[in-house]
Image (tube, rainbow, N blue to C red; front, top):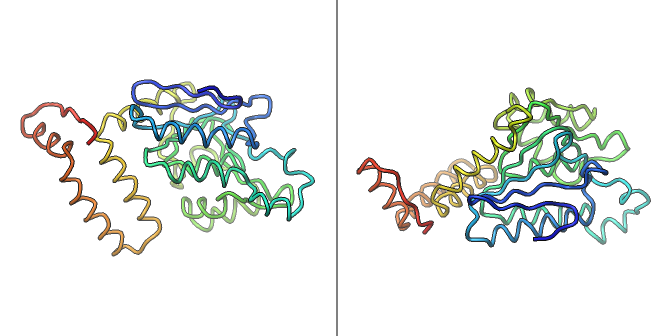
Length: 261
């Protein structure tokens, strides 16, 4: 896959997408968001891939939307094109993806960059990571999930604090607040994310997809409805060949050989 603003690598069942606009601090412009959506769709369709990693540079994950593209736009311009583009291109691909997507974040993840990381299934952060929604500093507000996903992740008080003041949250606070799943040394970030992704990719992919779907349902339904969905999903895994293989392997004290069906 050849792209202008991202790099894509495939290895050991994992697809690694690296944002690649270093001169612009990986700002999310039209080209990048379109290419990112295309890459995620392609990896989603690739039967050899079981998990996706989304990462950026060592100093910055993504510094936000490209303000040069937004400057001078009118309400009519933004509304007619459904800006931010990230909402239309990346969000659709990320939301539609059934394979897990891990955000591996080092350095700054600000504005649209923070929103992009939060849209992934979970975040592994380098100890250098800093998250923020600084749109208030330029007289506007988050527009691609900053007031919605952030509130769901860290609660009302911290979301209000960050979005209204524009302050950044470091990796330690982000982990305490539930925004990230774990913190690793910056020089070990990609290796740690790959280790996790490889472990996920080695599991039964239908079961992985069903778990992902069930957890997403949890954030959008009442507990009773979520429990019912989970119970039915659990029951349905017993049609998988992988379920039988996994239980046979456990009983026989051997490693299962999943066929992903």
